[in-house]
Length: 438
Image 1 (cartoon, rainbow, N blue to C red):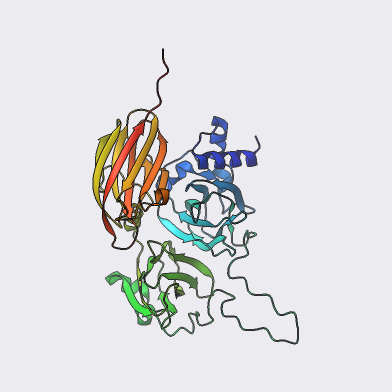
Image 2 (image 1 turned 180 degrees about the horizontal axis):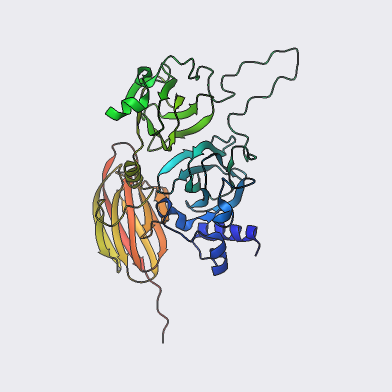
């Protein structure tokens, strides 16, 4: 089996939840499942092996083709032996609309993107420090998708055109080019040298953050661009909040270079986690309102907190919490046939664990009889996501079904919508294969 064929087989088998031949596992899967919060257990080294996936030493970009089915995600692994400016991209075939999330070695989200590559493709450029990273690609709407994932240093060839590609000049040389403030994705006013509105009233944020987060509120009409300065390196978390406005945010450096963007991080609010410290200099934060530009948007800059970021993953159901008592998990015990549990749920995921004693099919339902809008996510004890569902069978209730082996599993349930609450009945049923007659 060629390296390329092995990678494609690995991607397809992983997306379908199947097993790989031992040789393909040795070639395609990461042997160390302890980084990126366990996400690497389902990952593949983009260069084929760990040693060939060091982007700092690569002569060209690293790329794989990936198949994503049934709300699963593809995870590509790479490492850096030295700091580097990198570009991360995902492009779907046909009508595929990929979204990407980059996780650092500790499992914190470094960045997320959906459409910055243009034509539905995802793209992000950032500075990364030495370490191992996991790039997760999923289908934006959960539909099946085949796509390409590429990571490279910024001097390597790009996969996508980028949403910031300027418009072509007019064909008539006598006609002056029309001004297009959206051609670069940022208005000319987003220039740290000429900005008039600064977070912290122009004081270096790294000084102010020693006393707590820095917050400012304005509509996107009033302040579409916020500037800020740093005197020392700082890892930051930046949020833009007001669901009625549906804010999106983009951060660029003092040269106009794209760093990160986000929309709908949790509900309709946006957040960018910059776990790799920004270097001293001036920066620009563009704030858009996708729903109502007259609604006030609260922008907050705070020091990046690894523990808080990890807890945020648990609260949103994007990662399963540990079972060491450090995070609340309700233990349901063994599921031998049918088990029922009523849970008061809100927009923060409630977690339940259960035991399976024999191989079979687990079916889990979250039932509110349309008095709520729950979603379900199922993880195994290693932290691998097995299944996710929202709005099953034309209703607002949720249902997941997955093959399971003996072990411990965690299921998270949460309500859609800021502040939403509902009493949710959880129903767990285990179906086991019948034994052949003697």
